[in-house]
Image 1 (cartoon, rainbow, N blue to C red):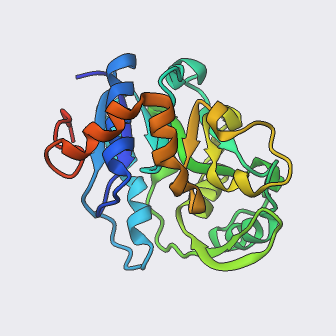
Image 2: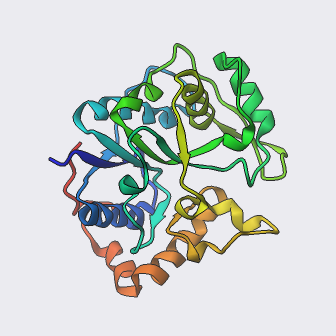
Image 3: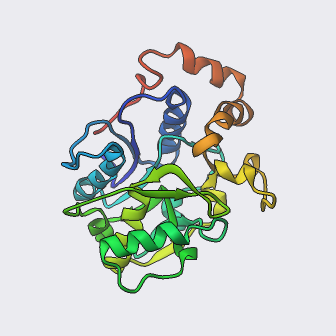
Length: 252
């Protein structure tokens, strides 16, 4: 067993997992990490979005692994993506801060008040929880609170929609409450799908090392699979046994 694990949340089923999970497994082979899917619910919070809180299971995994690299299920990794463990110091939480590109202050303030963060940082330090590099010493980031709630999701321009977030507000507040230092890995390692809707984009999603198919960005995943991995890889995922990931050697 490796001391490092790449972990993804896989509760239920999404068709794009046939590609993203396979790519994650290939990435694990390249960097020498175990591939772990969290596919069972364990938290006690009866919330419609509660499955997203299952990221808190990472705390238990850090009893077994020295470091964990978490990916949301709609993450697609470029074949030349470097080892994120090597890019992240062990005394830092490796994340990508999205506050530089989006107006999230309203949601951030609501979450800070609810979770008791009395001295919140600037919303520019608000990080996306779709990509996280975590060391064992940061495991308390995933302590389960007595109560969790969701908060309105803000669009890039600050507009509040009917969509809601639950894990991102929680983990950002936990990070502050536990005094965990972060390192911003940069947009290249978590290029959010909603960036495509921005008038100004630092670069295009095809140029990223990691694409995050959040929101409407999920439709770009098949196209990037074909571009980055070729048509043969794209088509072979349809014929593999199981629901697109039966051929993986899973640890969890």
